[in-house]
Length: 357
Ligand SMILES: Cc1ncc(C[n+]2csc(CCOP(=O)(O)OP(=O)(O)O)c2C)c(N)n1
Ligand SMILES: [Mg+2]
Image 1 (tube, helix red, strand yellow):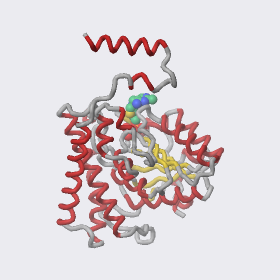
Image 2 (spheres, rainbow, N blue to C red):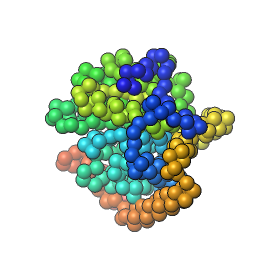
Image 3 (cartoon, rainbow, N blue to C red):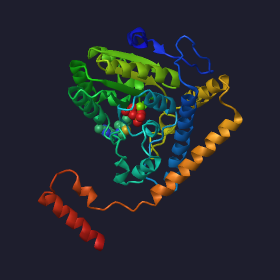
Image 4 (cartoon, rainbow, N blue to C red):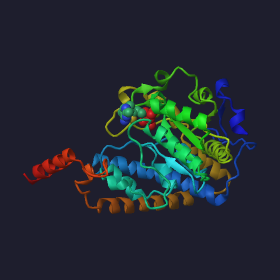
């Protein structure tokens, strides 16, 4: 078992596929060829959709957007390891994981265009709306997971969050409850080295973030977050353990945010080009591509077709999102209370009046 073997206190980090595309055949997970192809397609789709969102923001067609470049392995690998009944509580940068879980791309674009209707996922999509307040998804997701245990549903909840969220109170109460009630939860900490301009070293004095699980009475494991085989293998094991009643796991996926924090940020003000260059050499897609090459799956033609397919999907999704009518202004006021109280009604009327002017 990987999770028992890789002790975060000993600073051991799980890697199966290294930077040069070499695979540790003893640990290599068995993934069918058709799934390997699908995984690659989602990685490429995520990157192209991400680049598109960035370009749309620069053209004023989308609001502030948090780029995911560099996170493709951790997002796609973890989501791919989940079962049909499982649930994802995503963080704002998780477009790739959400796509794998069945969220339509046009809704993700719609959300970043500022239309809350982008959170209305089709019935049967087991994904909670993304969390913007840092860490808030952790206690919510843990509660959801606890409820599913009480209801005896065979469902695991995967909660995704950043290194910065480990300083939020929600992280601590979420993990504490999960440990006490042995909830079927996978806590996925995407350690991308930065929380806006705060480096990982200033976030916590712990050697690893994975070791924080030990204080709450369960296992933590650190994995190479740019290695999709490691992320997949360890998430699958954590999901299986949770399903068997063995409780939660904290996975720390070590990766890097290649772009700015959001389109409103300029990362060159607080980190060096040298650091980014080092991580460029660890690119999660390039690594998986060479793995597929060694299996005679990847070739230039496959790449061309995959990219074309992704570009078409992205163009279609943008068209669909841009064709959506703007939301009703009442929607801003409607959802906090079952019945709108007088002071909210007053605010709504005031806004309506001001829009007439
Ligand atoms: C409660 C709260 N405090 C502050 C912010 C502002 N904020 C947005 S993202 C962020 C940093 C989060 O970093 P991390 O958890 O590492 O995730 P990353 O953005 O690196 O993926 C902060 C402080 C917020 N959204 N919510
Ligand atoms: Mg971070």
